[in-house]
Length: 279
Image (cartoon, rainbow, N blue to C red; front, top):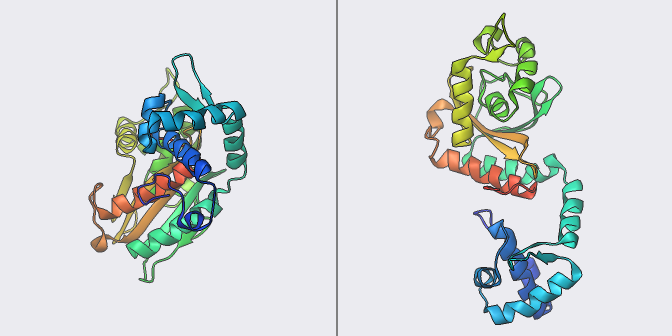
């Protein structure tokens, strides 16, 4: 996979002797995956860098074995065999095994600590922490459960949970790191079910729009955090990854270098879990 998250045939594979015609067939499959939508013969061939007349015999073979299907309008998409192979790959995925190299690379490139959390029974729980060589005064370790209100990692999870699930989790805030007073997040009502406070709801909407959240000097003075989601093939949030470092060392812009490093890592992981942007 290239640095921008698109697919390519790896250098190791290119170094080995293969069958040229199958290499061309592979380029067509890669082009279809990169597009993330059904493509016509002309568009699919163009994206693969070959003439339509050259691409067509390859596509016929792919249709015959079920790797591709073709609708009445002539558009190509994954076929039953392609879907079965994808499902097998998804079933074998281990979130932490897939995330490990991204975490190590992100920590090395940024010079900051990198944490990964998943949603456990008590809330967003840290399952991996690659610590920076620079000392940081923050009470974070594997097993720490993060506030859904007062931490960037927790808020990112909250932003992508359904409101009823989120309201069900919020009463446990007191046991989480930097846990909030329940009244800061939930507005009780005698006439109807509890709802989220307007300010909290607005913050979660901004996170969904930006795809990232930040926290500087709160809840821990002198510490900054950027956090972003990792999605699976259903579009559900699977993990949250975060950069953690001294507030003074951060590029605080959500479009800055640190944010772009984090987003590139989470987007690559999301792609591995089967998520495709814009579907």
